[in-house]
Length: 487
Ligand SMILES: Cc1ncc(COP(=O)(O)O)c(C=O)c1O
Image (cartoon, rainbow, N blue to C red):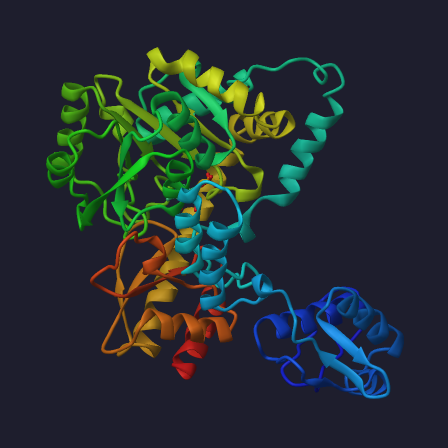
């Protein structure tokens, strides 16, 4: 059936049930300001004619919008956009800033979280804008059918295994499979006993803080750095010490000198987040020496270690560590899907019991059926094949995005090329500001992020980050073309 078109200003109906499409189209338009407060909405009859959908669908969509307070009816006059939409629903930055501050005055919550809310509010927060979203892998290449078949097999065979208690550290065959895989592909030095299956890197960070840190302890974090780590440390009342970064990754010598009292260094040596530098070998060795000599801990976030294109993936820091000071965090969020919430940490042998206990009291264990399914995916060789496919596609997508930016936006953006990762850093040229570019991106429903979102203090340069892994070369090119037109 031909998809109905809307003549009502800028409203596009997408796939789905018509009344729901209408509801979402209006809601989105109201929240992003395209339909402004007190604006009169055409009658249901007129809309049903111009949009070529049944009047009933229009009325049902309207009913929900009215119930939820987006529209209101004035007897004898018509239907209007409400002017009392709850502030927190409106997606404009200054409102988000106010929202972050509103936490403080109204609720007795951890003040550190307010700081986090302030930072988050700097970002492009509408998650429906998926184009250029950063932190997302090749989700379109996820082997849906295969995963479904394996999960089905696991489910059918699960009668005897469900209802029993399972180890907090995770399903042993999965820990064995990961240990083998990570030793051969990432150069890890580990046994299955050291592996704890977690719900992604985020949980690995939280558990590390619980196991090793106490309130007020100091932690290193790159500036700019990973907001997920900042949030986890702040919400557990750690003191986060910002460390400078350059092309070689974290500036280790500077950090050692400035923060001698830190207990834990958080670092992403294979791909600094978000700028992408790789920690050089001399810095890796300096970091490991410092940790061994002063009894410090290192949390290695290897979120992008497998996304390396022209060269061989480099060995993880954990594999170089002779003194058992590194806690390694790996994730399947990028190579498979973030929704699976599957990752693993490798604990130094002396910390294994403490991590298992922390995991037990956090959530008993990670979802069992998904663990068994992942074990099959790896042991049957599907995972390694998938990694090769993703790497190739990601490289093509990155190349297409760079070419499009160089063709359509040469005087606006300067791309920082990279041999790895799933997003690009684009420095802004001339007088262009992050705010200007992100506002334009919002108008086009593009989910690019400003670099400032990942900075605790003002940063000397302005940049936007463009995620590319989840989009085809054609889509990337088209979106850059549109951005170029509006800029
Ligand atoms: C720097 C960094 N580390 C780790 C992750 C993965 O987090 P998780 O495994 O909790 O999904 C992300 C996700 O965006 C990230 O950007």
